[in-house]
Length: 232
Image (cartoon, rainbow, N blue to C red; front, side, top):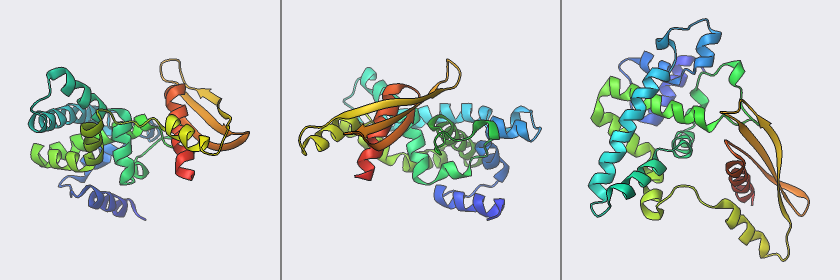
């Protein structure tokens, strides 16, 4: 598939056709890819447009919460907004339309255990939103954002949080079969001290049933439990 066709396909999933396709290309370009191509100017990769998208995202979600939760206090709205705009939420929403498949990524930022880092995907979400804002204005950016994040917004409004406790759900499921031995094993820890990635394998009665990665061990364990639940 040509680059042009890939970008058209992504636009169909976003339900928005760009007037200036270079904005979408910039939003999808990670700094590592630009540098490998010998492009070091700030308009060659997505960090600046991500900065803009982050601000637009907070505005859109704040607007949504203010209008649909009239009884909530400021502190409660702040917590809900944080849950909606978090890394896990944004990456989950973009994965739902396979948006991670279109990110231009350098060889130095290859996937971990075959899975692209949530942080990179979340940054791309914000950058795409910034690109839509610049290309089509606030109203279109808002409508697109709310459509992409509809499940996450609905979950947070109902439950007050986004992430489920997959470890507890898995334990309850397995205990129905009697005594169980569930073990989470840390198998890899990589990256600089301020930006580490952890890889965990999950074993049930000595048999591997799941694996996960995360920015800390607790997150990696939750992802491993989620992976095991999906297999079941």
